[in-house]
Amino acid sequence: MERIAAQMYTLRDYCKTPADIAASCAKVKKMGYDGVQLSGMGPIDPQEMKKILDGEGLECCATHISADAMEKETERVIAEHQLWNCKYTAIGGFFPKENWGRKLWEDFAVRYNAIAKKFAGSGIRIGYHNHSHEFAMADDIRPMDYLINALDPSVWIEIDTHWVARGASDPAGYIERVAHRIPCVHFKDLIVTAQREYKMMEIGDGNLNWPRIIQACKYAGVQWYIVERDAGDMEAFASLERSYYNMREVMGL
Image 1 (tube, rainbow, N blue to C red):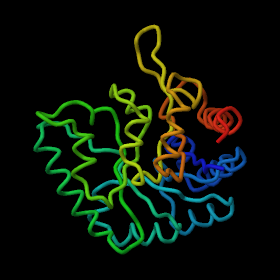
Image 2: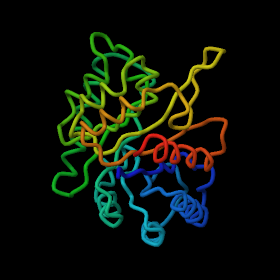
Image 3: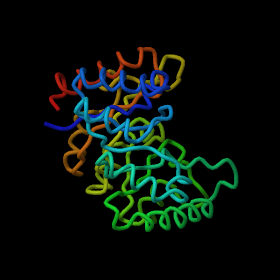
């Protein structure tokens, strides 16, 4: 049975304090989730986070942290992830505000590869999570394609199905491209409204080709299927519950 995790960023409005985080993790576990990805939560002592995870029987499959933290607080980041028995962290994306072009992405890749070297031998791997802007041309390169080739092989790629589709590309195709370099994938669905606006949906309730995506995940050796929904009509806990039901009961994961 595939392991399914909840991206806690989905519940960020309910995770402001340690007590909130504990209550949210309990609800996630009760839904059936095997693990969580820690992101978007309020401050909490690492030891207290470990106590919550152990108490609920939840695995910390991955985290999202900043590149600055990886670069400047490497020892702390490593120690926390080892404490949580978490092998994977990633940045939520690189969001340049100016100087869009090839050199911008070349400079980023050089910096991120240098950060990756700081984690060598720690048992912790850093990764990159995409959005849609990585599919906009930067001079003669498509940044997503460039990053896959330019980032050190130790850097894992966290494909987000929704944002790949928003970038007018094929989620399954990109999952296959980074086979055996994608321990964790972000499952997020998508529809286009009558007003021609993109909208995030619960897994299985949108337009993405989930049989094809799941086939690609199995081919690529994905270990964790992480459910995330940034925003939407359904209340956040109900959204996670709906996605989990569809993945287990409808899709057969």
